[in-house]
Length: 165
Image 1 (cartoon, rainbow, N blue to C red):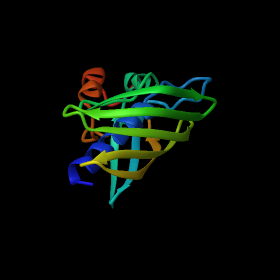
Image 2: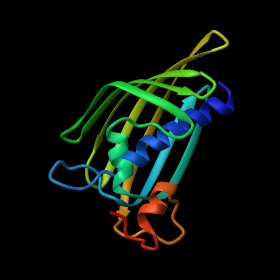
Image 3: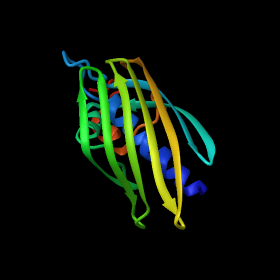
C-alpha cells in the first residue's frame, strides 16, 4: 500500500479517536473533553506509529458517535453501536478520488480512556490489501496547554480558554 493510503487510514483513525475522546462526560460514561494523549499504530504493508497530545471538545465526540469521518475521507457506518463503554462500527470510507476502504472496528471507552481496533480492507490496482489499526488514548487533564494541538472546531469552541467543554 502506498504512503498516501496509510496516511489516509491513520487520518481516519485520528478522526475516530479525536471525536470519541470528546464526548461529554455523564452517567453514560462517555469520554470527557480535555487534554488527551492519543497513540495510533496502523499496519498496511508496513507499520506507522504516531503519538499526539490533543485538546478535544465535546462537539467533536458527539460527531464521532454519530458517524466518524474527517475532511479527507467520507465515511459511512451502517452498523454503529456505542453504549455501556463499548463501541462497534462497520462501514466504509472513501477518498475524494473514490478509493474505498471497508472498516470493521471494536473498542471500549470510559470518561478517561479510549481504545479502538480496526480491521481495514481495500483493493489497489485490483490487488486486495488488508490491515489493522489500533488507537489508544488517555485523558491527561481538564486544562489544555496553550500549545496543545487543536482542530479548527476546537479552536472555535475554546476561543481564548484552555478548558474545553
